[in-house]
Length: 400
Image (cartoon, rainbow, N blue to C red):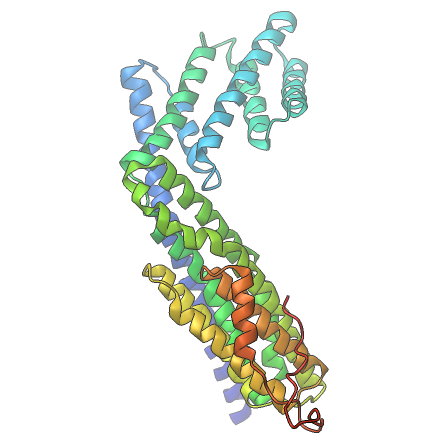
């Protein structure tokens, strides 16, 4: 009974932990989407009022649909989406009117119009959004034109009104703070990276293969976090371009815009690091004491990078901690490592270089600083020094 009670208590504790994590994730998604939701609601209301009250359209259905469709586009592509909406409407109206004039209306005519709209837009290199919009507009023209007079002109006007008001809301009336958007989007990606590096460091200290393996599997599931980060950067660029109130933020966005690729590389290189750490533990290779410290310093560097970006500070502390990780890796190498251990050392160096580049240092300078911090360590134990008594620097694995 005692064993059963312990297992049940452990299972319930795990369920509570998962519930808290799930609730935290859902609340984070709501916070991320709150600005977009308010923008979409305002744009839909204003586009309907404008089309109904000022343009005397009795049923301006397409105006709010176009507004929401523009805002629902990938952040950073809303101007492009507005143009695509209008082009798609033009193609759909043209094909619908022409084919109705010659063929009349009916089921097979509808199928022919939709097929023609799709093939025509694809032939001229239209995007998926234009293809869908052209086909949808053609369907509306074919099915509603016989019972609704002058559908074409309101459809055109609604596309202009909805897309234009969506851009007005995002650029003038309710522009989001681009730095805040990026900070919120960057946090999950950087927290994921730092958290799994911390787990790896502790797993190396305790030779806990299972913990390191779980960290590797979790880090591999990073596509959603990286996609949200990249999309937020594109959205911030668009906002700072379209919104006069956010023009002064352009220079502050430079760090984030240039950091996306090296952070992505740091994620991948950290995955290689953790994978080889798993192999180290499996093969019972030596794990010098400075090696877990080096990985832990990388984790702290990621956290400092996130914090310094968020407050708009020059990421000096993140750089210093990255170089500290490299220095500890050099000490570990000097104490002696196996094959997988040498790969871990190499990946510490490479990941540190990625983080240095993400902090705003060019690649060549980052590599130079990493080599300098690795230092002229003594050769691994058991190997003779060169004649003259001067120790030879280790042939460290190359930077990636």
